[in-house]
Image 1 (cartoon, rainbow, N blue to C red):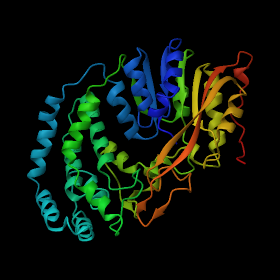
Image 2 (image 1 turned 60 degrees about the vertical axis):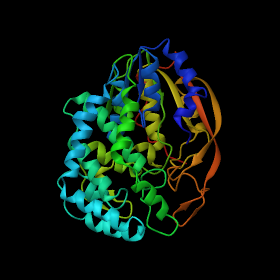
Image 3 (image 1 turned 180 degrees about the vertical axis):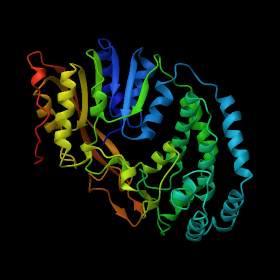
Image 4 (image 1 turned 90 degrees about the vertical axis):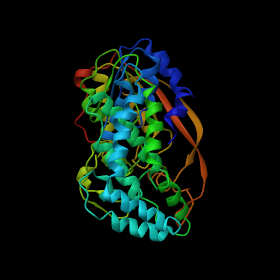
Length: 405
């Protein structure tokens, strides 16, 4: 769906600004890439509580909301990036990876084949080399990511800031269409994209992103943690402003971001398939991304929110989504316990690849591994929910199982 950065400039930011005047804290139970919490942290003197099922999202959020002053990146470059680069250049694997680049960078199919073979060599440096080398990243890039992770600062705040820049660099360098679900294969039409991605300098990319994140910080120190929305709801207090932006896809989001999750965790078990997927048990599962449980998950979340008597800003696609939910269903459930003031926003968004709509769209045209540019109209509802005063919250039923139709 539409970017939250776009929505912040198109009504959402104004609504948050208006409602935060009356709120004690700001809570984001589905913080994702962190766009909304970044906006609140930099503009409002309110504590932020954020969470997500995926650790990479929590790292990105904490990179800004847990800091209350600008960080000097020159020291980090010296004490982290420079040290990592020196260690990389002394590595025997790095020498082999560099030789591969020189030998095969003009023969992409051979470059990929030999890179995958090289990255089968066991490495104890970090998880990226064996899991993703020769697939999402070149061997040299993979080794660089592993050393960047291995040499992260010990200080918790600085470590998180640096790790966020590594995650950002990995997202930029990944040789995959849009999200990181499956890497490009060396076909006639996709070879160019592999070459373009594999030639990105990881250290320079990481340095650039580090400088961008480091200059942003929160007016009031906040916290992000790995948790489900339902769990974080139990910690809410009357006077909180909560933004709810749940998954809209019937496919688990962890399928699309496992590369970033591996980097955030600094470890990965065995991987398999073209997509280099970790075991299912290692990928967080959301009830919102299961068509048989999504409605009950929404009911449970709403009933938990009304019990805490909080104000809610709810954003969701207006039409029916692949997880069985829709803007209409959201409104129907919310109206049981909340007074609603809302509107919809229509805008265009690009389809970046096979998984850009998280499995929820069939209009993207793909030939081989080439993605034909497409734009579709999308409409997102933004609902402002205020607790009804005549609801007996002690009798809210959270046990009923709702059948998805």
